[in-house]
Amino acid sequence: MHPAVGDRRTLTARAGVLGLQGDFAEHLATLERLGVEAVDVRRPDQLDEIDALIIPGGESTTIGKLAQQYGIVEKLRDRAAEGMPVWGTCAGAIFIAKDVPGHPHPLASLMDITVERNAFGRQVDSFEADLDVPVLGADPFHAVFIRAPVITRVGPGVEVLARTGGSVVAARQGRLLATSFHPELTHDERFHRFFLSLGKS
Ligand code: GLN
Image (cartoon, rainbow, N blue to C red; front, side, top):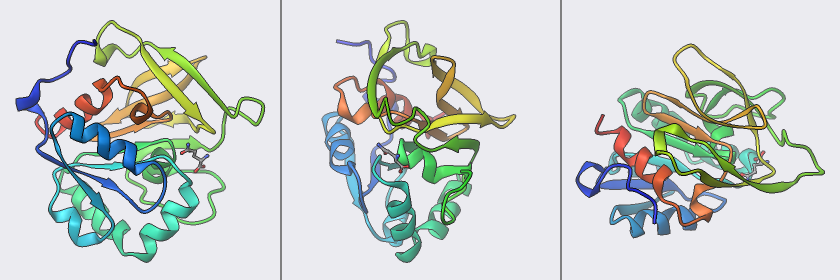
């Protein structure tokens, strides 16, 4: 058991997961385990019904293309500007970054970070690592990386939350959160709890 980060009463009551592509089902399951009402978001109007949104891992080009096509990007920018917490995991982190060199088409551009895709290279397609994440407490966080991006630049308002081998792999800017790895694939819910407490801070 890991110590809780924020108890039930301090978590967002209803959170969405962008369900266009990728491993959204695992995020929905984690939210449900935490007793949060979980919404599978596929239309822009659903963004008005939720208090926080997770963008899952998957393929950032596909997620970006579909989100644009379904009119979600513009609405998401409005909701984020209103203060709705948004968390991108892996491809989701690419989707919310302001700067992604060489990305074939525009993304949501919410968070003041530069993200390099597939930055750990082909030889290490996927790996796992125990991260020191002070905002989650003293226990290390076991992180799963799959064709993971790296955060290569953080803007002045961005706080680095975790590194591995010197590379930044988790960061926060106000109510925006980006992680290169997949907390929905393990059973340590501290990152989900941390995210769900951002709207209450
Ligand atoms: N490499 C993928 C991309 O660029 C992200 C991988 C993932 O989400 N696991 O979209």
